[in-house]
Length: 329
Image (cartoon, rainbow, N blue to C red; front, side, top):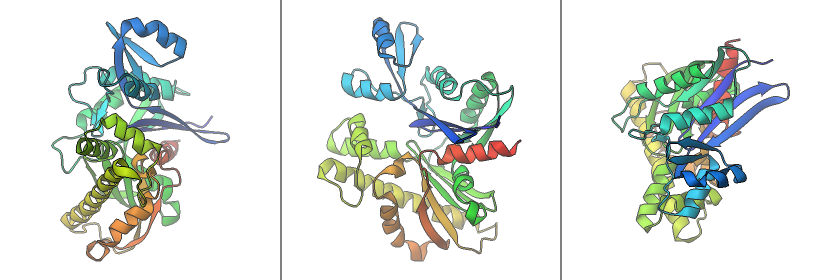
C-alpha cells in the first residue's frame, strides 16, 4: 500500500492522484454544476448523471453539467464552485458541491489520516482577495473525509513534477481556468510566488463579449481545438488575441515581481520555464508563448535556459502534490 494523495483544485477541473503498483493513477472531474428542477430526478437516474438533491432542485455536476448547459441554453447557466481560482463568493451551494466532488474523486483514505496535499493559489497581485478562507474550507472538507490535509502552492507543484533533472529549480507557470499561478523555486524551495486573476475563463469571457456570443459557446470552441499559430475563422481569431494578451500579462508580471523582490534570494543561474495547466493545452501553445517571450527577452530580468511544456499538463500539479505527500512516508 503506497500512501499519500495529491489533489489539484482547479476552477475548471479537480484532479486527484495516487500511486499504485503500476504507476500514478489520476481521477478527474469537471468543476462545474447546473441547477435543474427536482422533477428531472427520474431522468437523471436513467442517464447515470452525477447529481446532488438540494431542496426543490437538483445540482448536476461534472462534465454533464457543461453538456446540459449548452443544450438547455440561457435558462440553465453553468455555475462554478470556484471563481477566479478561489471559492465563489455568494454561491451558497459551492461548499456542498465541492464536498460531493472530492468524495467522488478521492474516495476513502487507505488509512485514517492519510496525507493529502492539495493545491492553493498564491495571493493574487491584481485582485483584492486572499486565500485564507479558500484554504481553510478545503482543509475542513478533507479532514471530514478522513484525510490529513496539507496545502501546497499550485505552481510550485509543477517544479516538483517536472524539474528533477534541474535539481528542482525553475519557474513553474500554471495556466488554469480561473487564475494563472507562478512560482520561482530554487533547490525545491519557493523563492517567489504569485497569481494573476486571468486564465482560460478570462479568455472565454472576453472573446464571447467581443463577438456577442455565450461564454459556454466560446469554451466549447476552445476545447474542440484551436491552433494558436493558425486560427481559422473569426471566433478562433478572437480567442488567439486573448491568449496573446494573457501570456504577455503573465510575462510582465514575472518581471515586475522579480524586480520588486530585489533578487533577495541571490539568483545567479539560468532557469527553465515549465508551462502547464488546461489553458496551455491549445495547439502550439508553447511555440506561441516563445514567440511572445522573445519580444521581451532582452528586458526580462531572469536568464532563461529553455521553455518547455509539462509532460502531462492536465495532471502535473496533482503529480507534484503527490510527490510531496509521498515524502511524508
